[in-house]
Image (cartoon, rainbow, N blue to C red; front, side, top):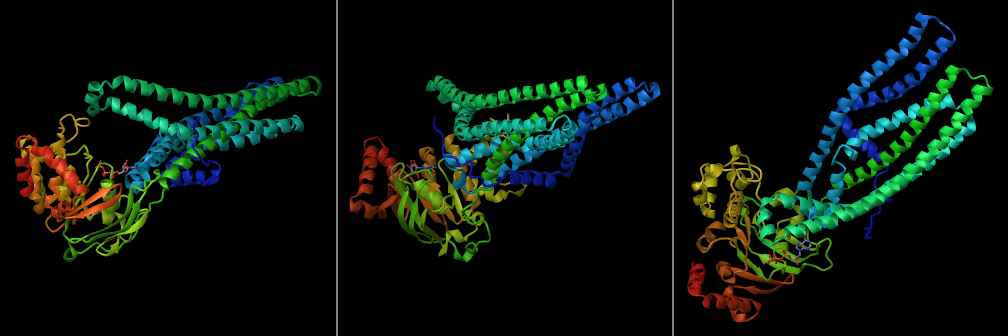
Length: 619
Ligand SMILES: Nc1ncnc2c1ncn2[C@@H]1O[C@H](COP(=O)(O)OP(=O)(O)OP(=O)(O)O)[C@@H](O)[C@H]1O
């Protein structure tokens, strides 16, 4: 079985520190919840105490023949006490139940924000995803750490108080008996602790499986995947994969359960022995030591109660450990440090300093889980207002380079300068403002078309600018054909009256969003891959206008389309292998020429292809 290296015993926070963290948050967020949580402690002790006291006073009153009035008073007081305690307990229980859910949801809120706000590098890749998954498990349901903490700590404290009270009653039975109790409870504790730690260690194996199961579940309900699923006969594959991962999950859970089962069996056996010895001593005391029936009943109740408190303490401590370990997962994710500068940064280039000048000096990048560098020793100076084309075969590192440039990744080695200021000196979020990027994968939110473009709520949108970018991106025609125009909602999966756009329309929308953002550096990663030839031609014709007074990077596999750029950089295996303008690269006769000729040949061999090609590129 694959067990990932997880240094769980090298704890970052102690159990006490994690408890303080959860309690402090509870106090800060909801003092009422904290109050109800505290109130439960004496109530949980008082209730059982009155319950074992009641039969004692009843029997004592009968045996001593105190008369009906005294008897009623004697038993009336504990009965009223029990009723009050139970009523208060129920009330506070519901308050903490409801408050506990809200308290847990606060963590989910923080978790979501962290996932969306932390450095991209922290959540990109499987390590980051696993960390998120494990942290999410601490907030997933009522039994998860962030909610269970209330129940567990209330129970633990009240169990300890109860144990001390009951212990002082039954200590008088026999001191050796007390020693036996201590040994048996320690055995229980260590067994439970072992089971918990095993379960925690197993979680590292469970998280990736859980991630896959979740993926299959989500994709099965995602109607976007539905057509591929059917046409490529993938439903069987989904079913089989689900079974395989489910089997793996069950196998891991069985391992956890078997350890817990063993711990429970030992707990049961020791409890049985403990009660047996206690009852033996009590029966002996009644028979030979003149113990009163009332006291026998009290001791009997105290002994049974003592075992209950004791097992509950062991259970609570083990639960508390689980809460502690889950809280560590939560904090590990929430406290993940951002490498990028989140503090005060240098000023962004002023209007008169635009367009930006970009320089990459000896830039290397290696993905966190990769063995080799994806970007190797890139030295590139992109001058103010230059139109740079970035080309290369699939996997050459073009998108990675763009992500480095716009601050999503930090170079593993080397530096990036914007207007002669190191990129790391800018505040991360300010730095993002410099870039208007269209990535290959387009992500739309369930909002209106214009809100998706502006990344703002309707009331804050600059309508004039909106119309301008809709026209420039070529999306206006589509928008005009819609009944609600730019107010039309996106994503059918969320809204019934929403629409879904075609691949090319989405690309136009992404271009509109980049133009609306109006960053001084514009990066277009394959922006026309899904466009029809007319729309593509329009974009090429407008390229000068789109990138006016901006420094731009244009990535495309269609080499002819890069001819309108000032310079072409050819990337291969993460390195710049050729650079220059179209003519110089063609004269050089290297890899660029080879690929260009290959594509041109394809166009020439297709009727009318060369004609079209000429029209796009010459415009
Ligand atoms: N998050 C990631 N973790 C690890 N490796 C990655 C990650 N993203 C990309 N890679 C790898 O880095 C290499 C470069 O990928 P990149 O997307 O930068 O290439 P590209 O030149 O843009 O390719 P394409 O032309 O297909 O878009 C690829 O081998 C890819 O597998």
